[in-house]
Image (cartoon, rainbow over all chains, first blue to last red; front, top):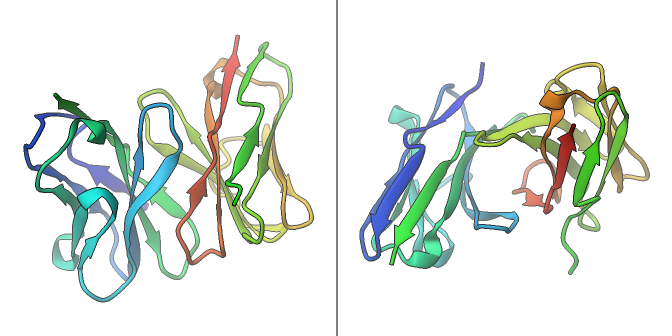
Amino acid sequence: AQSVSQHNHHVILSEAASLELGCNYSYGGTVNLFWYVQYPGQHLQLLLKYFSGDPLVKGIKGFEAEFIKSKFSFNLRKPSVQWSDTAEYFCAVRRSYGQNFVFGPGTRLSVLP
Amino acid sequence: GAGVSQSPSNKVTEKGKDVELRCDPISGHTALYWYRQSLGQGLEFLIYFQGNSAPDKSGLPSDRFSAERTGGSVSTLTIQRTQQEDSAVYLCASSLDGNYEQYFGPGTRLTVT
């Protein structure tokens, strides 16, 4: 079965710390990869996506993610977090030939001012 | 432009009653998805529509759950004979077609008492 795992359930950081959130998926073949963010009280919104090409993708608000095919990973990074980055982060994977998205369980990020 | 809208935003119902949840996708988006998000859980895929047809119903948890989409636009998710374990936030998302990122609505919080 398809599955997406996210390494951390809850991450607590101080402002200006660096962030890396792990995401791994369980199947081979061509995939499309996404990170979504849900700020408190708001909709899920897209942070960044990978379809093909450069495996290092940049998204909004200074986030980036690196697709490492050999490791089945798509980790999210930000060099210096802000209090406003406090949110829940979801990794999602879609096989390119199918339309079903599989989401990870989410990682809650708390940034202390 | 207008985003994905869902109604009602909150629904409290008694166990055993039927409920209908509505989703209005972004105009022109042919793909529509329903997910369920339970407390502390990730997003559980329920069903995917392309136009009015549902090529993937694999996520519907039981035959009490059904969904339809008419006119390639509005979709309704119906839960019959609700159970307490149906309590969750039901999220709808739409996509230009199945190959692009999803845009999420605000969700309907369903509480079954």
